[in-house]
Image (cartoon, rainbow, N blue to C red; front, side, top):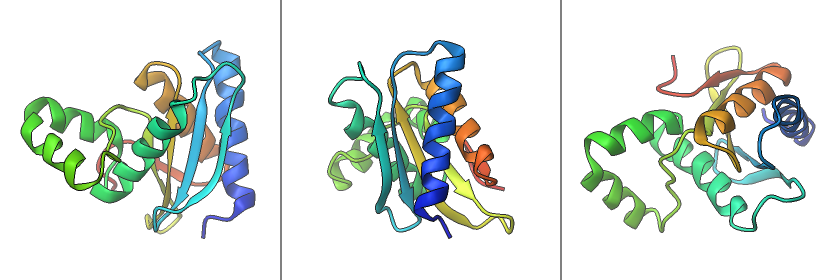
Length: 144
C-alpha cells in the first residue's frame, strides 16, 4: 500500500535529489494505483502549471501501465495514437520522462510519481531517487 507517509518520503527525497543536483524548482505529485492524489509539493519558483504536468505524467503512466519515458518513445513513433490518448484522457497524458510507476516487493504497481520543473530526464532521476528512498522499485518504462 502507498501510505501518506511513504508518499511524503518519496516527495522529500525527490526534492532533496533535485537540490543536490542543482536542478530547476520542481513540482512532485504522488498518486495511488487508482490515480488518486496522495501527496503533492511545489518548490518555490516552480511555475503554476507544473502541477498539471506532474499529475499528467503520473496519471498517464498509471493509465497506460508503463512509465512516461516509454510513453515519450511511443509518441515519437506514433504521434497520432498519442494524440488520441490525449483526447480520450481529457488531456491528462503527458508524454515526457518524469512519470514513474511505483512497484512493491512483488512487482505490483502501487502508484506513480510525476515530476515537472526541469528537463524530463532530470525529473525522472528525482522520481527514481524518491521511490527508492521510500523502499519501492521504480519502473521508468514497461514494468518487469
